[in-house]
Length: 170
Image 1 (cartoon, one colour):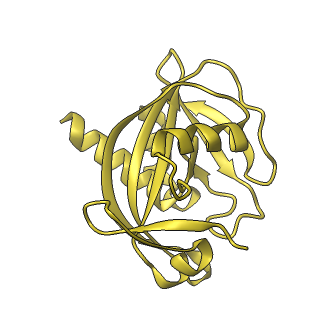
Image 2: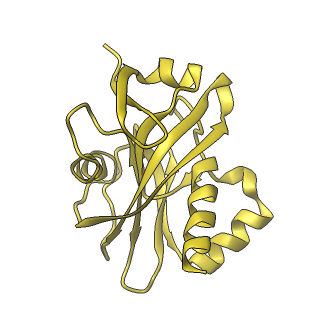
């Protein structure tokens, strides 16, 4: 059976469950998390999404993202997915949550209440090839320049998260 995700209202209250692909086809608001792992030099670990992903394949994105399972809190879910996708563990802390909606390829829509989780890690990942095909650390300044010059190479949610983080610091 397809993975079930948690449908939520605009205050992140659970209102039901749906199969992941169906929720993305219908653009239903659901709970997710996005992880940004920084090294001690302030570099953000990016992953290049695997070519076989069902949307946004081959695009550069934040370190890891996913959906908590029913009954699973976002920190636990984040630690689980970080291990599954990137092959390492680190402490995670939630820094913000917000709703965004973005039209994706293959007729899919992200309509998510996104919990942004931050971690620190100086090592390299052990990539799960079904999830990610490459990785790198990049400064936020360099990343902003790359996104401005070639926005098509990055996921929609990464661009939105970076804008939210910048405005939160301002």
